[in-house]
Image (cartoon, rainbow, N blue to C red; front, side, top):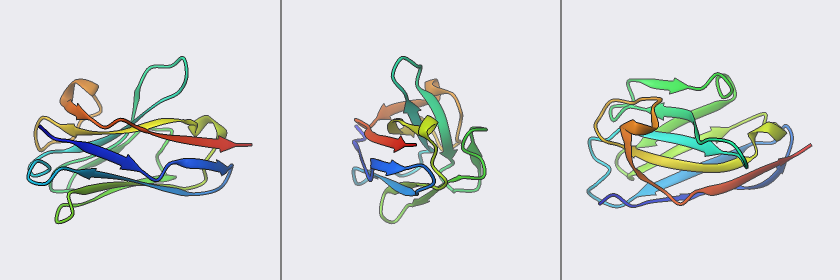
Amino acid sequence: QVQLVESGGGLVQAGDSLRLSCAASQGTFSGRAMGWFRQAPGKEREVVASISWSAGSISYADSASGRFSISRDNAKNTVYLEMNSLRPEDTAVYYCAAGKGPYNSRSREAYDCWGQGTQVTVSS
């Protein structure tokens, strides 16, 4: 079973940047796409960005495009989410997820292992 641990969240001001990290248990990161999702209070969990196992395919939600950047280091079993120009509407719990296979997807159903989440709060 893949275990995922997110870190890097916090309280920032609008316009600031944050870098989230997600470390996966050794030996279970391999061959899987990875995704970052977020869930704000009272809202459904939504995809933010996803990256294929090879990093050859990357996808962003419209709200993240141009501001966020997803990357992965397969040697370190870690996926990152660089977030710039943060806005109050980016406030949410951010989750990383491991895909069922190597191809990235925007669908929650394509992911079968989730971290516990890290809180990101952006003040205006």
